[in-house]
Length: 261
Image 1 (tube, rainbow, N blue to C red):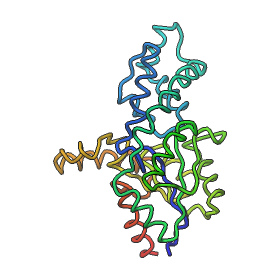
Image 2: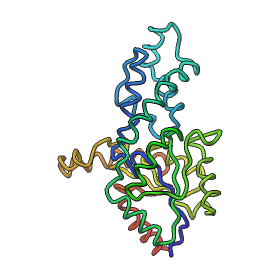
Image 3: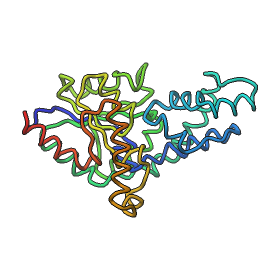
Image 4: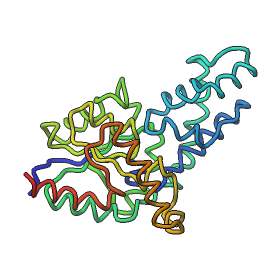
């Protein structure tokens, strides 16, 4: 049995959707509905945050705010964020299931962790209405976590700790240091840090790299390593205690940490 009681996984870019593609394209399309040109780079920058907060962050970017002001006569307000959010959510609901393939090795990793006695929790920056389209697809592939905390379930989302506190209650797992938070984004790692949990970042499957397994396989080892170092730095700066390539590497890390105790 492990000294850890639970592992809490993010979804897109961590356990499903290698490269975190589903939300990125929808942000670009949602802004286009309002005549605003947003780049993929701008869409990826706040990834991991609750989606309303994500849109607010994008609208605070100088280039996007300037476009909005030129078109509508004012800097983007919270009411304007509401308008974009209302367009974004139905769009994301439609496409999320198309990007819900498990990260290679994820099911085996989860099975291994369960065999070690860990419960499996999950938090996400997605709304519950979006996740309702993802959960059945993941379940058909054998991934069914013991709980799910969505961005609109609680009064405050990432990077605050409430989602992790809810996981502790749902899973009856404590103290915080006995829980591992696994995520590919800065807000998701900070969520775990804020709750006092051990945090593990996933570099190659996540938003900071933004490539499919096939795209990564076509790169040289040096090119992959440069991407790994870039993503690792982002995750470490957010407070990650450890960084691995993908969730497939987590059981080995847990065994190592158990052996060191």
